[in-house]
Length: 238
Image 1 (cartoon, rainbow, N blue to C red):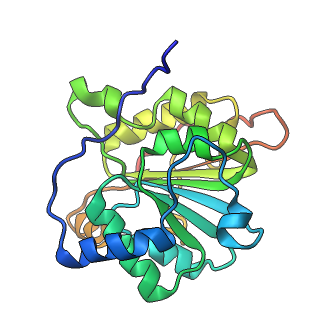
Image 2: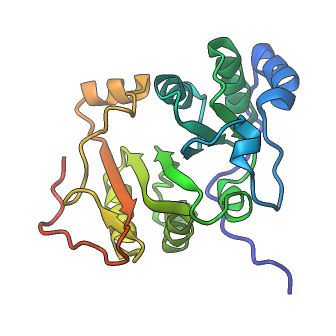
């Protein structure tokens, strides 16, 4: 039987790529890029050491991924992005900052998780500001669904963290419901979490906060004991 394809959480558009981004893509992807393969990745061979590995899903233009990797040199990061301008931008940052602990895959994140990441291999998964697909008829395209939560949880090591963030309240509430329903995960707080210090504020987030817009962080952990802790209180909106 042919493999069932999941609903894509993105649309590939022919966006404008700058000359610098294209040059970085052409020159640096062979150096810092990781080819997609239907086979488990060997992080130790990729990074030349044994260290905690965090998967960054949807790295965008790369500023947040690069800042986190620079601030945490003892952790290795694998960014996943499908759009060429963002890949080129992040490659430039990796080169400029000499980030030996950050690499990037240009491919669908669900397929990377499913085929390139061994079960229990990740110390963390970052899913920052994924496309909210605000129209109701498009909600099926949102990446964080029950099937994705189960896949992500399986790839986390016991105690590993799944950290998601969004500035769309209905998506935040959907995320919270989905993650609470996943048996392998437990919430680290009651409801939504304060923004961890390791997640930098983006310029767009600062602008939104200045206009009074809210941001919701969700920080769930793959439980160690096999028994999920119960949340004692209902989620509080921020």
